[in-house]
Every structure is written in structure tokens, then in C-alpha cells.
Length: 395
Image 1 (cartoon, one colour):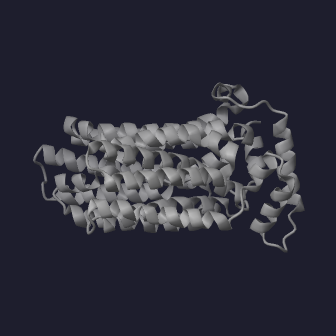
Image 2: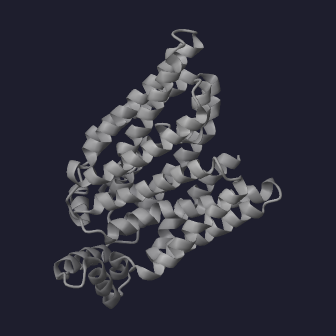
Image 3: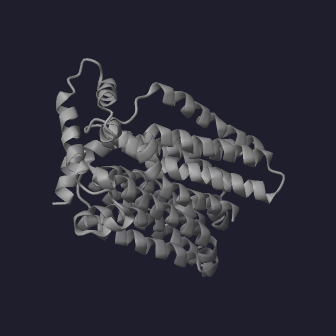
């Protein structure tokens, strides 16, 4: 309950994030989310019983749900097209780094102190938001012309000529103004269907491939396989950061699609190795090989996930939706993502007690499905403007 209520809060955050970001702006949405996170950490710190703990976890989850949508969208809207993939991936790198730092300091701090450390990034963000411009695309969309040009100039450098880019954004937004305001049901119209299938489909495969079960219970998996949980967790945390960091450097060169394919293939391999190790353990075969196989499998899995499936679906989500449905469609994709995170983290222990190797083979099958999905449906989006990408998909 305490473990999975966070993802439940994040689902609510995901549903409301689009409307909030459209109504009070990308920066306003980030401030709102920070407020919930601060409240949540304080509730956990002062908790005397289970109720406040759960409330705190629900509130921090809500903040995370809002951030998980607003941040990639904000980055995609402010980034120049040749850096958009790298900058959106840096978001994922920072998430990984945060998780890894928490994993590592959590081995030395008590949980109450650990909850207080959550206030540090909140403070940094609230302070930092005073120094960065609002999304120019959002300012243009609500008709704040002067601020739009100032923000774009600010982002591109004061000597850069922004008139061409400003005109592209204006034209695009004028076209949109003629389109009706999107509601959730509108996403299923033919002209939006392909971008919705791609955006939501990638989220389904990202989560149902098992990442949150494996990531929430990584120390248990290492223990079950007979490997040191502390050593395993720290290797896992460091590896995740290093590979996501490498990913940042290649995403705009290699492209989104090759990374997704390499990543899904590695996920299948990692699941199969872990599955084989648990099969051997259950049947008392080659017991010396069990810990090595399990650890190799899990480390290949997290490396493969960090190399593509972790970040790329968020990059593509921030690129493929036309701006008039971006709020609703982005909320739907983020909601599906958090629902998957909840479902997988909630069912993982039950699945493992049903059949430990069966669990990993199930995840392997889902990741194999992801390979097919990417090959047949996902377009390459590197080096194109957001306007070009959407025109190509919805043609």
C-alpha cells in the first residue's frame, strides 16, 4: 500500500498536469508540483502513524505525476531542434541520478532524515524558476506577444536572429487556433490516432516490460538469487546513471528508433537470463551459476532500459503530439505510464511467488512485443522541427 500509493498519486497528477500547464503555464505547473512535494515530505517527516505517511507519499506522488509531464514538455518547447533529444534525455539522467543518490544515502541515513533531504531539490527548483523564461510556445499560444519574443530571444542568445523560428511558431499556433479545443474523446479521431497510438503504446511497453517491479525490489531479487543486496543495489544505481549519461550524447546522432530497438533487445536478453537463473534455482540445477546469471541478467536489464526505453518514450511523447491536443494526449500517455508503474509494482511480489522464472519470461515476451511495435509503428524524429514531425505523422 505504502509502496504503490505513490504511483496512485502520480496518476492523479498526470491527469491534471495537462490542464494545469495549459492554464497557468509550464513554470506555474512546476511551482504547484513543488508545493505538493514539500507538503508530502513534511507529512512523512512529522508522521506519528500510518495515515500521515500514506498522505505524504500520495502528495509527493502527485507532484511527481505533474513533473513527469510538464518537464519533458517544457524542455521540448524551449530547446533548439538539434539539441532537443539530448536535453530531454538529461531530464531522465537527472531522475536516475536522484534515484541513485537516494539509494546510496538511504543506506546511511534514517528514513525521517532521508525525507527531509527531499526538501533540498524543491528549494533549488523554486529558487531557479525565478531565473528562467517561460515556454515561448505557451506564451505565443495565449497571445502574450512581447513576452513570447523576449523569452525566445533570451533562450537563443541576445545576438541570434530569431525571426524565422518565431514566425514558424506563430504560423503553427495560428493554424491550431482554427482547430477546436481538444477533449479526451477527440484523441480517437482518425487524424490524431497514429500519434496517440505511438505515444501511449511506448508508455505501455516501457512500464509493462517490468521496470518498476525490478527497480522497487532489486535488493530482494539479489537476495533471493544469493547475491549481496547492498553491493548489487549500489552497482545497479551507478550503472543506471552512467548509461543514461552516455545515452544523452548519442540520442540526437543515432536517432530515437535505433536506441529503442537496441534497448528492447537488451531487455529481452536480461529477462531471459534472470528467468533461466530462477528456473535453475527452482529445479536445483547448476546452483553455482544461479547468482551470476541473476546478477548479469538484472544488470543487462537496467543497462538496456537506461540505453533507450527509459528516456526515449518521453522524448517522443514531447515531440509527436500537435499542440492543440498536447495537453490532453500528454496527460493520457503520462496517466497510462503511471498506471503501468502502479500495476507492475503492485503485482510483482504476487507474480514472483506464483513463479519466479515465469515472471521474467512474461516480461521478456512483453519486451519482444515492444520490438515489433517500434519496427512497425514508431517514426524517426531526430533533427526535425516539432511542426515537421507532426505534419509527417498526421499526413
